[in-house]
Image 1 (cartoon, rainbow, N blue to C red):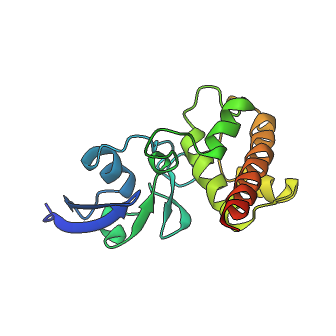
Image 2: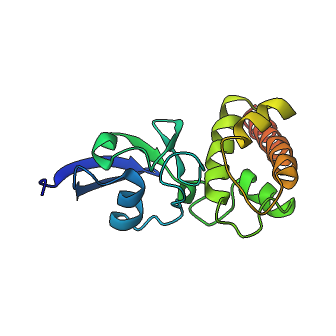
Image 3: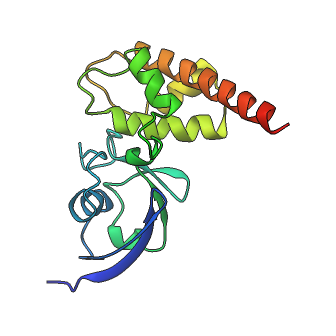
Amino acid sequence: MSEARRIRMTVNGFAYEGLAEPRTTLVDFLRGELALTGTHVGCEHGVCGLCTILVDGVASRSCLMLAVQADGAEIMTVEGLASEDGTLHPIQEAFREEHGLQCGFCTPGFLMAIYELLRDNPRPNDDEIKDVLGGQMCRCTGYQSILRAVHVAAAKMQASHVASTTLRA
């Protein structure tokens, strides 16, 4: 048996340190060692997108990454979207308002992939959104409500950005 290795990472703004076997996936480390169970495990082959998180700002499949590879990384999971006071992120609000989820099992992966999209492209068109949605699997919604939710989230985020810019001026 391999010897566990000490790893350090920042997850949702908090520094964590722990021990991980070299074969432990990042999703298993997040869920098992850090009790961050919002990231779900689906196919364990990187196909379904359920385990999508941000690693150093890039959407990544946490089932395909070993925990030891994340040593020193900045990680954002779905738990990092809402404010500390529990206020939902505009993407989460939009998913709720537009019924962009049914069973909810795939939702964390969608939220994280869409977060990266809207951070990098605040006004995506349908094709750009569908490109991101195509990397995430849902068996319940049919994707139309998710597509609407992304448009609503983009508008909310733009309005929030405009409001905060106006307040600073």
